[in-house]
Image (cartoon, rainbow, N blue to C red):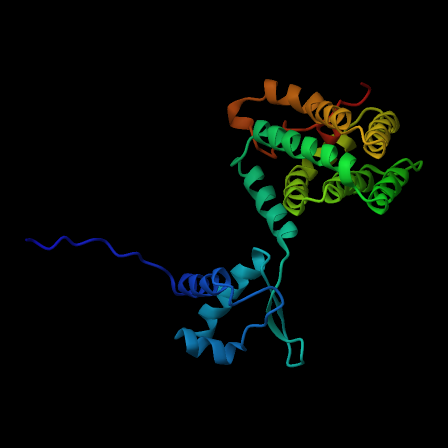
Length: 264
C-alpha cells in the first residue's frame, strides 16, 4: 500500500509556546493569580529563545489573560489574570473599524444584550448597584457636561446595568460592544445641532430606564432599552450601503446611544 503523506502544520515558535501555556490553563494547572517562572527559567524548559517566549507572553497580555510586571521584586514577572473586558473591547473596536462587523450586526447584538441586561437587573439588581447607576445619570444631567464626558458616563451607565444583572459574561460582552461604537457615538454627539436638547432627551430616557428597573418592571425596561437603541441606529442601518457597513470613515455616523438623533 503506498504511503499517503499529509502536510504537517507549520507554526512559528511563539505559537507553540502559546499552545503549551493554553494546555496548562485548560488542564487546570494554571489558574488566575498563578505566576509563571522567570523568563531565564521558562525559555529553556520550552526549548525556545527568550525573544520567542516574550512574543508569546505579549500575545497573552494583549488578550487579557496575563500581566507582566518588570523588575526584580516580589511582584515582578508574569502572572495569570482574568481581565477580558479591555481585551474584548479593543478587538471589537478594531474589527468594527475594519468592517468585520457591520452596523446591523452591532445593532442586533446591542439589542439582544441590553434587553437581557435590563430585564435581569429589574429582577435581581442590588440597590447599591442601582445607586451607582443613578449617580452616573445624575452626573450626565449636570449643566455644561461636554459630549466626550457625557459619552463616557453614558457608556458606564449601560455597562453598570449589565453588571447589576448578575451575569458576568453579559456584562463583559455589553462593555465590549458598547465600547466598539464609542467613537461613532461621540462623533454624533459632537455634531448635534442642539447639544443641550440632545443631552436632555437622552437623560430623560436614562432616568426612565432606571426607574423601571428599580420598580422591577423588567419587560417594560427591556422594551424601552430596545427602542432607545433601535431608533436612529435602525434608520442608519436601513440607509447604509454594504461597503459602508462597519466603517469609521467619513459619512458613517451613529445617533447618540444608537438612539434618536438630536431634536427628536
